[in-house]
Image (cartoon, rainbow, N blue to C red; front, top):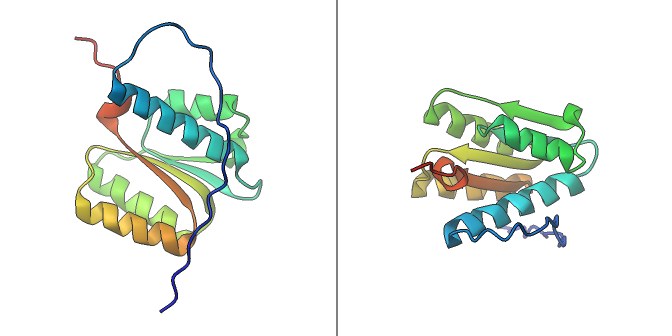
Length: 139
């Protein structure tokens, strides 16, 4: 059995000005991951899709602002968690996307393992976020 190890390109990331507002460590980690996802999408080859499963319109606008042409962004919006999981797994298995960014309600260990295996097979970068980690709570 052969194992393929995917090589990740290092990128310094997108730099934003510091507004002086302190954030919680979970929010800072989520912001760093979003920045990494944006950088990976901007560096992706021009013939590959950037697939966004779930998420909000603001993130798609951030992708466009980061230099990704809107014609290369494939945004899949679904109603249920099961549909999002299925869409994300199918996007990984087809191999036509350079970067897949997904928002799920929660990540169970079984689905997480399936995504890791599919990502290794397709050699696609995949970023997964739980919906609560990126939304700021008003109360």
